[in-house]
Amino acid sequence: MSGGAIQPPSPEPDPPGPRPPQARLLVVDDEKSMGEFLSILLRREGYQVEVVENGAAALAQLDRGGWDLVLSDIRLPDLSGVQLLERVRRDSPDTPVILLTAYASTETAIQALKLGAFDYVLKPFDVDDLKLTVRRALRMRRLEGDNQLLRRELGQQGRFEDLIGTSPPMQRIYELIRKVAPTDSTVLIVGESGTGKELVARALHQHSARSDRRFLSLNCGAFPEGLLESELFGHVRGAFTGAVATKKGLFEVADGGTVLLDEIGEMPLSMQVKLLRVLQERRLRRVGGTGEIPMDVRILASTNRDLAALVKEGQFREDLYYRINVIQIALPPLRERREDIPLLVEHCLQRLSRSMHKSVREVAPEVMAELQSYAWPGNVRELENVLERGVALESGTILHQVYLQPISEPVAVPSEGFDLEAHLDQQRRHHMQSALERTHGVQKAAAKLLGMSMRSFRYHAKKLRLKPRTE
Image 1: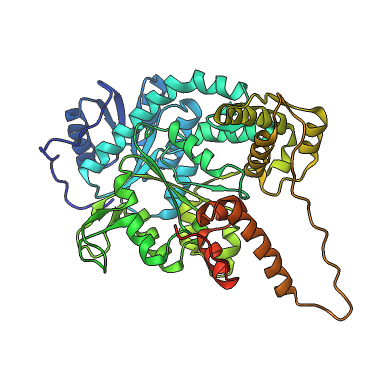
Image 2: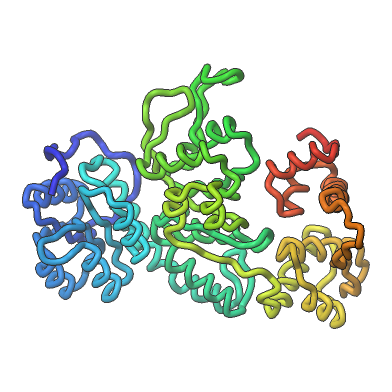
């Protein structure tokens, strides 16, 4: 096993952050010098440390129980660190496992994360980075224990954070969030527009060890390529025209927290290369800068597009796809969980009545039947908009009428043929203009209403000569 010369732990004070006193750590490494190094390093942090040199000794220690964290090399003489991880996850699922490796195998690392490892660290490692990873893992363990009862109660009440529903598909989503949230694994959230992908991302953040730090979201389709790089990585003064001062990027601002890369399928290919490098090395370079800055954020991504199909078409990098698709959460469309509609309606009516100073508390039976039979192409977001309009126009306590968008019949193709592109442009112009009127000319809000990326909305607005308000 390689990893370069071992340097003694840095005597400088560590970055601030809580750490559990006297946590018990099991270190597994067949290289004696590395085991001694880790023992000294972690004991200085105030932890109780036991070092063993092979898998058999590790299993014997695990049978005794009481470990708060396991730190193991992936390559051991008698079994692999992945096999050890599987044993820990089976017998003590609340115990986080951090794997160390001198071999930068993305495939092995992704396998370990999918099996439930908290994180993996490449040798030779940065001492401060390792200490922070250990602290986060131990904080996650405490948070998991503190919140188990609360999360169970929320799930039984038909809601999880701001997610609403008791249907089997939603219960599966809640359970997956519970399992994945405490880890630092990258999660890809997929689903149609309006299904609540950002709500899932926020729930993952709230139930993680990073919940006391910032959650930031960025729509990858809302910025030109050059500006997107600056938004993510920051820039130094003078990097480009208008860069009058050095600015931190999203990854720096969210240090220690979570970043959601929304609509990642809209990211230009050249930016995908830069993002992949940052995700792999966990370091970034500001636009126009020369120094590298350590990055400590959890990355979540979301999309309503088929990324696997985009990979085949050459529009999305395969290596980035596998890097962000460690764990996938697929949100069902509303039409596949109609039994949740009454609960969603109740929740929305309460919120809307408060915000609009109305007294609407329920919907008439015939209205509920209409809501449950509708296809909801815009999903929960469309349901919320329909109810908002209904509540605004209702003067009583019962909602007696809703205004649903009729689904157009397909146009029959005449024998002489017709201009399909012109027909589609006409339809698109009608819906985009309607959305702009509804949002008082704000492009971003209109694009969100139609489930479009900002890049796509701006392209079609220019093509169709729409003149929305400048934001």
